Image 1: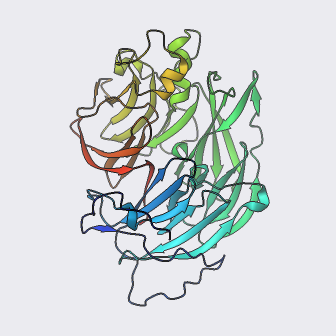
Image 2: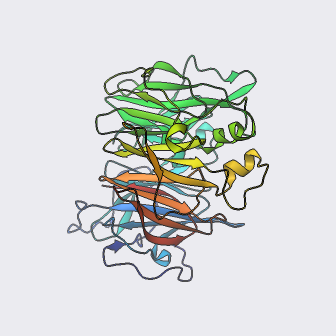
Amino acid sequence: MRKRSRLATASTTSLMFLAASLTACGSSDSEPNVNPDETESGPMYSLATSILGESPVTYVSVFDSLDVTSLDLEQASEHSGFATIGAAGGKLFVGAGEAPELTRYSVFDSGRFQAAGKISFASYGLATAPLYLNHFADGTSAYMQLEESRRIVWNPEAMTISGPVESPGLATERDGLVVRASYDRAVVARGGYSFQPFYWTDGNYYRFAPSSQIAVYSHENDSLVALLDAPCPGLDVATQDEDGNIYFSNWVFSAGAPVVDATAPDTCAVRIKAGELAIDEEWTRSLASMVGGRQTAAFRYIGDGVGVVAAFHDDSPGLSAEPTAADVTNGTHWKLWQVNLETGEGAPIEGLDWIAGGYYAFSIEGRTFLLLPTQDYASTAVWELNGNGSAVKRFETLGWAYQLVKVR
């Protein structure tokens, strides 16, 4: 592990660090030098943050409580490039930032961690294997995106690859626009199936087809069982409520054009009801009416019929009188709103300032955390949403943090 100068204040006693050897142990599951007294039974979480620059570097920390108040990046594990993290089967996975490899780690209650297998996707032509292109269906099934319409099936427990599978029927182009696969933030596993949106856009992510499709994959045989037409552009965020209903909404890019071009398709959201494999046509809606008629991005359900969504404000300080689509998608001209799906009412989250529309949020154990970077991505603030429509700042870390996972 490479060391660097101290970057943050010392953590609370509940904070654990990935400070053990980073030497990979090949593709086997053997774990040499394991202390027989060490256990993997307590809760453990992980956060990754990337420091930008000519030579980006990513720091991965683990901790045993969601109530941490600071991170000490000097003690975190350091990975070159934009390394990514994920979790499945009680193990932590780190995707190398400069190689098509994933390394699996055992994370012990002591805070020590140890490599417990490595897998490479080099034979499939990948330069890297970022985990935001990967979906863990469960502890033994995972899908790594290959190109846009294909997936590589692999087993995170056995650390083996079954091979690529196709998505028959998914059009690679529509009206001159190219198909794009959604990221992991938009893929949901439920009842033996995975649901993944696809959408069509131009090379600048400005023009979007007015509809998307949601692929339904069977975990039993990894096959595509349905392609659902969804009448909303750019679907790239998904979230699930207590009853198993799944909501799909757009990421920030598809909100740019409708702000500057009245003919562009407006943003909206769709739902797949619990136990069904079809779009709930009676529910599809624009969320604009809940946020003062504004374009929206990244709706996420948080509980009790309530969700949060980013809303673009054309009265944002510093916004040009004639904003471009880039101003909309890249600027901090958004407010995060809490919206009630039952009453149709909404209000801005108290305590939060202007944000970028492409915000990251994670719901873990009934708690919702926001990862909000500064405009230059030099640092990231971690906030927790409260049920009363307010947010509390928990801590800050250097760099761009956009991944928070529960290991076990």
